[in-house]
Length: 442
Image (cartoon, rainbow, N blue to C red; front, top):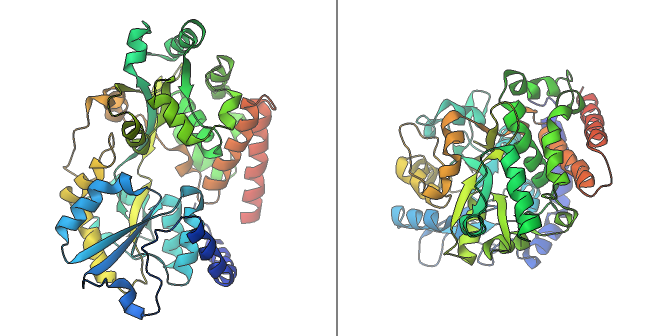
């Protein structure tokens, strides 16, 4: 459902942001959120030209520099007359900072955006139409970033989250690799009780992480069914709610708490600690995507990893989170629009997509007639990829519900993990939030 109020709301916010931009960026710089080499002079177009005469193309994302090393190398080789600056901003602040920069024409030339951001800025016209660059992508990828019959982002390779497990821990402790939900619980019990090894290392400080984990377990039971696939459409029009449809399917997720796989201390554990515990063999499993894999390998290049899907008891019984949720957009107001568009055009080719994919192990391109071979680490989720058991449920909830309800669900489930609330009460609170948002929209 496209928001009828989105443009007016956004324009109102922009007036406020314009007044506070100076203070914001002083704080951002002090916090190290913007790379120090970013130009801040008053020389107009010269802001974007380096002393060596090369045109500077600035690319903003929530990916750290080492997560884009292959992309940087590819662009440097393909465009010897350009220089590239990759601007990292933490995901928690990324959208608000980009909104502010776009509002006063201070944004980078190319900007990573998720589906929600793409739709918002297609409406504000802060990002340019790139339909002509996307002809060779699948219909799924095109639909992810279309608005008004135009496409506003070159698709990144597929997003995904799965379970990474330490093969050596399982083998050395004679623990069978899980193949079902019940065997997953049994393996975790043996690791924790008999072997005194933490089954899963995971940070639940971010509510979105907890929502993702819960819905990943629900997905195999529900979102893969005909009924489940229509949940988002019914939800955004007020024809159903979480309590009515999802409550029965949360029983599997509650089992993760009962078996002490999800624990109270995860509420205060940060993501870096989570990854370190897994990388150094203090936990048998963790959850994440390509960036998680890269972080683990940097800490322990010799770790022997495999992947698992999220198991459930009924339905298709297994699934992973994933889909076409991130694209690269062109700043409509950049003075280097033609040069930046050439870069995006290159990233829409097989060679460009391969460069992106090399930084994102386990992912896959949406470019037609192109496929890249992932390592054996990802053999455990191949079946899900081949059978289409890959879900991003919240992308069907509509732009008004997507982010706030995904966040609210995570906040409520945090209280369940902490033993402060029941799952039934958590879902009921989420339903109240949905009602409030839908009433405001109408």
